Length: 195
Image 1: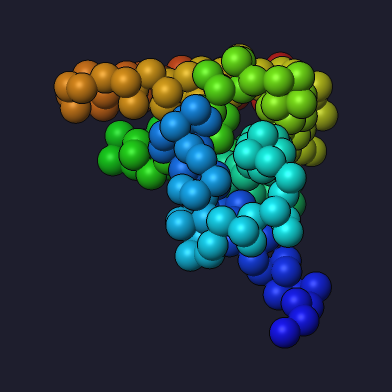
Image 2 (image 1 turned 45 degrees about the vertical axis):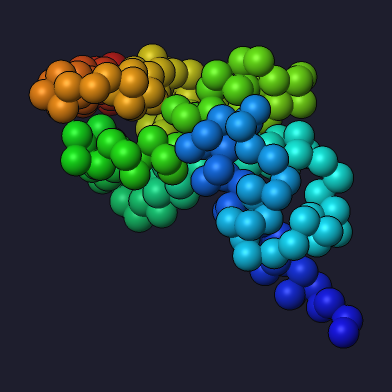
C-alpha cells in the first residue's frame, strides 16, 4: 500500500508527539527509538522513513514542540494592551501551581534545557532558535525589543523547572505564585517603559 504525503505527515506528527512527551518526561539519555515508536503505536522500522536518528528527532522537538509558543501565537488582541493582557493570562496558567505537572511535561523550554546544554551544536542551536521565537512572540506589537522579555521568560521557565524538582507542594505553590507576581511586575514595567 502506497503511503500518501498526507498519511506520512500524520505519522510523522504522531512520532514527534510521542518523542516530545518521552524526552520531556524522561530526558534524552533515557529515551530510545523503541520508546518513541511504542508511544506512537508504530514499529521501530517505521521510524527511519521519517527521521535518520534519535538526535535528529530531538533537534526537531527542541526547535518546534512548544505549546507555550502556540498559545502565544493564538493571542487575538488588536492592541498592545490587549496582547499584553493575554500574555499575562497565558503565564498565569503557565505558573499556576495546579498546572505544574502538565506544564512541565509540555514545556520543552523548561523540561529539556539540561539536555540542550549537554547536546550537540545542532541541539543548542534549535533551543536558541525556539527561545528567540518565543521572545519575538511575547514582544508582538509591543514596540520593544524581543530581548526585553528575556528575564521574564527565564524567570517563568526556570520557576517551572525548579518547582518540578521540589517535593513539598506548599513550597512549590509558593515558588510559582511568587514567580508569577514577579513576572507580572517585569512585563508591566516593559509596557510602561514603552508608553
